[in-house]
Amino acid sequence: MSANSVAAAMLSDDERAFLDVVRRFMAEQVVPLVPRMEKEGRPPPELLPAMGELGLLGTYLPEAYGGAGASLMTRALVAEETARVNAGLDASIFVNISLVARHLANHGSEEQKRKYLVPLIRGECSASICLSEPHGGSDALSPRTVGRRDGADWLVDGSKTFITNAPISAFFLVFARTSGEDRRADGGTCFIVDRDMEGLSVGEPFDKMSLKSSPTAEVFLSDVRVPAAQILGEVDRGFHYMLEGLDLERVFEGASTVGIAQACLDVAAPYALQREVFGRPIAQYQMIQDKIATMAMGIETARLMFYHLVRALERGETVTRDAAILKLYASQVAVEASREAVQILGGYGLMEEYQAARLYRDAKHHEIGAGTSEIQKIIIARETLKLYGG
Ligand SMILES: Cc1cc2nc3c(=O)[nH]c(=O)nc-3n(C[C@H](O)[C@H](O)[C@H](O)COP(=O)(O)OP(=O)(O)OC[C@H]3O[C@@H](n4cnc5c(N)ncnc54)[C@H](O)[C@@H]3O)c2cc1C
Image (cartoon, rainbow, N blue to C red; front, top):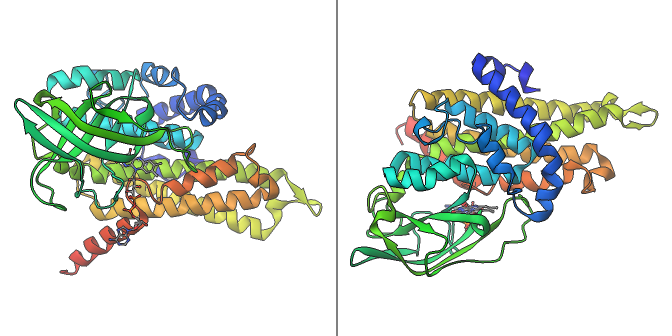
């Protein structure tokens, strides 16, 4: 368990105490809700307000808007522990709190913060980040969604896909090209589009393999009239806001992914200790021990790395290469751990009644969502070659 790990020594006393509170809340309040949220395809409506009330959502966000103004580490700890219990719930909260709320806190006007950030931190609503489009998500700076001026307003037109929370979101941060060329960071604008604005519609929730408790859908924008006051930050700066947060997002993603891998060990190790085959617990067989050892090694290494990177981000350092390494490595660890958890459980591993099957489906998401493994490799290679003058 992480409480005894080398990584735990990197937490302050306050953070360790906070981690205990989070774990207790997850065990007592969230674990019993998991079957329901997986079936209903969304977080239970009463859960986010309960988390908001206990201060588990806005931990690292400004106190002026209902946050706690605490360390970035507190958000990473909540992400790990949430994903450990349910990766879909974590994905929904990740978008609300690690993405949308952070963009609002960094770039929102006072009025936007009061209207959108405060209820997000309280858990009273959900929101979406709309970047990916049907023609491709990796090439994020080449959207076909456009915004054009019309008098004092803007008309936003296009479509987005794979949008987390879309079926339940109260509002959407929509990234559109407003000037410039494909693959250029200049010329993108982020519009805050309310769900009830005319011309916005949301598709049916996708039937997904992974993250079943996090609803995902397409978002269609048909010349939606958006007042200029609904622009986040400055016109043509939206892609810069997205790019400047990528290191942090990858580190938070790494924390979530470690949570899934830890959950695999939580399922597999007790099972191996109690399951007897050929007259002995399977934990006594070296081939099973090899799996347990490999899982533990990957989890501790990835956790140590994400703690280390969170601390670096708290000091204001740039960690582009290492954040991509963490995102890639942690997702590989989680996918491998989930495969081995299923294997250790044998036939029971394939039964939905046991958690291993869900973890196997959920882990895979993290090799694709928030930047695929191939894209992480491109970043790691680019940043590494730079060190050699490339
Ligand atoms: C459950 C879920 C939730 C999501 N939530 C959101 C959300 O809330 N908001 C949002 O905006 N997006 C969201 N996404 C989208 C996600 O970010 C994209 O799926 C991801 O970025 C990949 O884009 P794509 O699926 O279009 O794949 P593509 O970009 O079409 O890539 C297809 C394949 O080609 C590979 N590839 C692409 N370019 C290269 C290259 N240069 N070299 C080598 N290989 C390459 C990719 O790695 C991948 O394997 C979500 C996705 C999922 C599955």
